[in-house]
Length: 350
Image (cartoon, rainbow, N blue to C red):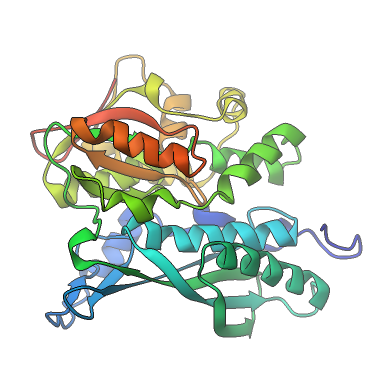
């Protein structure tokens, strides 16, 4: 489902791609720091206070609605794949809250005149295929004529108020589990430079279109304390949010972190994204690196993930149940990568 040869590649029309387009964490924090606190109705039980993945509104004692949105510029040139990746990424935030998606709305910005209606239709078809597979059919949306191609979703879900998963409940002694390998940002950079192999591209598409379905069942597992998904801020950036929100420290075992073999090779050859250094600059003050810390280590742990995996903080006795949940949903690479420790919000890397 490639574009007509007469059209420019989708990635050539965007200054960035995927979740690497996100504002750097420190820039976003600076922008929001001067904003006055908004209204906090009692039924708004999760808001932006801890930079969580979605907002949650309590409807009654049995039901809460989860609402989120995500959109970005192309991370691949195939329009159908772009739509699938963007939709998978947007719905991930619903799963990260422990909710079941119910429906979605499309957000569409396209450079009319630069790409044809057939290409735009393929993007929308890709997004629809994923949304329907997740049980969140696209019920409407909004479109504009944009300088760069942009696509994403508003995603809504339902969850029991007692089973909401937030990014701020990690406890001392918890194990940290990552659901997908790192390296999507590196793959995206290699694709734009024309040096990504067919096998690595296939691995990239398989990961970025794999729905984070395990999240919908994690709230039912006793001992699951905090969940987020790893996207544009990289593993260290999103773990830093968990540590700050939970007032805990964390320890990561580098060798335990799943990384795509191709991405590791590309990083060692000097491939990197523009977002990795920005992500590192935002979290470096709270990271304790090892003596043999390398630029490759830094770039991989700060690599911006598009449609990345869930990061789970759970009690040691819940690890087997959590890994079983991941495996049942097709996440074969889910791995224990570290633990939560007592202390001020810092991350030690071994």
